[in-house]
Picture 1: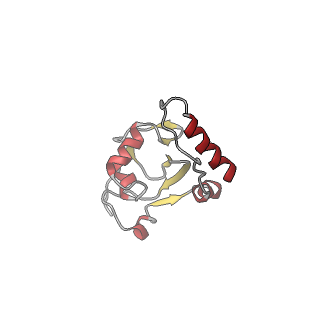
Picture 2: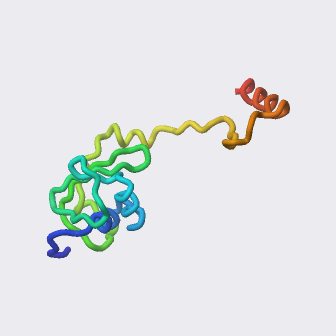
Picture 3: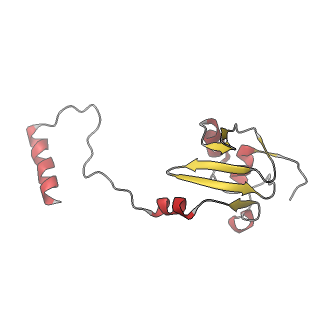
Length: 128
């Protein structure tokens, strides 16, 4: 643990294992998926103790409270002492729900299906 007063946002998100790489954390900040107090933050914003960080990751909205500052990546068990997970259980359940895949895939711009393709699609739809 260091005696730093603040750490860069992207570095802290990476260090506490919210993102796999620091580049992904910076990209999330740049695209507005990381907010503090409802305002999007830049990767270079300084994180302070007791900040509440909201991260939109895939279909979930994760909420974390900064307990301690961290400038180096640590193991998953040790990372829990640096961030408190305030994410509601309803958001966690979203990740566990199965995602429905389409029965078939047709590339955009492929035009109308031919008679042969329509028959194949009908066979698929009738069998399910």
